[in-house]
Image (cartoon, rainbow, N blue to C red; front, side):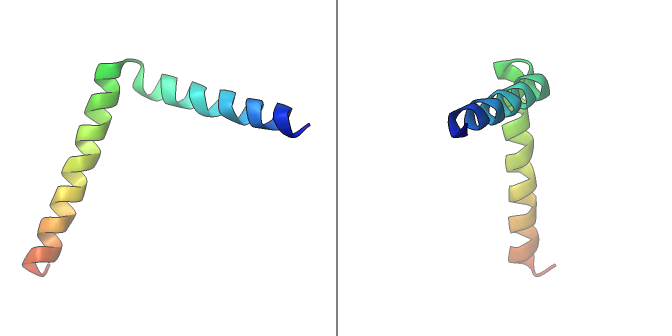
Length: 49
């Protein structure tokens, strides 16, 4: 039962990842946007905003 649950969760997670990104290029863009947001927040903290 635990194995079945783990496999179902893995399948659902994988489907979410695949539909969200569609391609490796899409995944790269997602990671790049996330990095830009982190950089922006870090600069705001550095500047005391």
